[in-house]
Image (cartoon, rainbow, N blue to C red; front, side, top):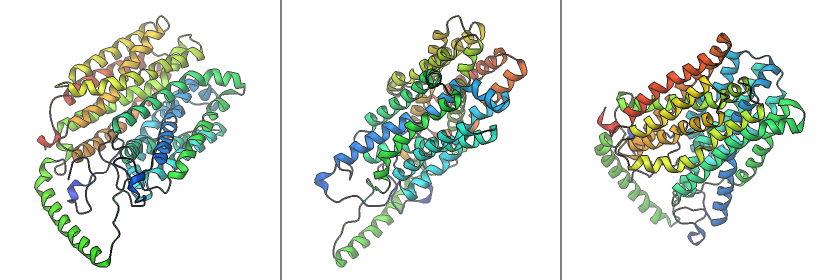
Length: 468
């Protein structure tokens, strides 16, 4: 069995890994059969017809565009939301931590739901949840209800985010890199678009922050449409051939023998392909989890609080939103450059240090003179935030097999998102307690040091299988 294939039904128990929040298209979730047997109409490597693959492309791009506006649009209008709901700094910090909590919690459920209902159905429901959450939360009259409805939208974002690589692997096994790049670009563009236009659009509509936030539900509603025909599609699953009873009996015996051989082979290979041992016993796995968590902390602090830092420094709300857009749009080109560069390097520590230095200089500028050169600080922090694709690349390089990568990705990302939850809350608390941004920015700067250390440790040329 190749490493990039889903385990056969008889695979040893230790090798059945559950994909979790991962942007590494190593292994697609198993699905029931239901695709057409007309090979002549199928695209290479799948059971999908060309029109179906074109529909999936449209669905992927629209879904990706909607995976961040619910977060960055709120960051651009956070001051108005706080005033409108009477929200404290700590509660505002909790609100900016909700994305991390949802990514950690809903990420565990997404693969299981996809195996039961199919990833197309789960993404369709996810887009509907985003639409409902973004449409209803502006109607909330108190902070608790606003948090609950935000969590509804973010839950849809989380499950869809987890399943994007699975969709790519299923429908485009021959173009994984190209399609991953396309939806990553669409995700970054959606993030930047919401940051840039939310405030001016709110002013143009003239009905306050509630309409300015709610209008993004319309874009999410459009993204539901291409997924409706994909709800029952089971393309990409292994198909059972049709034959006579005698042929079926022979095939059943062959499958039983093949299963026995697979079990024997997998028991032999278990110690070397990520299927055995406790991943918590690997120092490299812990270093990756901490690096992922600290970079996620910085990213969500940036998306949630950076516009407010610039606004409190005297910049207009429009300009603060554009600055956040500049920070977010840096992920478009660098997401294509960093992974192949990191893959060619013996160790990734130098890249970790370089990105960390950009972050330290950006934070220093925010602390000393935020209004003096805001475009420079936004650009520097945008480069530093590209630690995300670097972390994903390192996850793919720290195991010897596909099964090991899935286990490492599950551990590093789920643990990392849990680590990132307190950061935005503490920033809000420190801002309220100190009455300014000096102390919160020092806290953000201090977090960059362990991020660099953990990244250097995670970037060493090691494999997790050698450490347990």
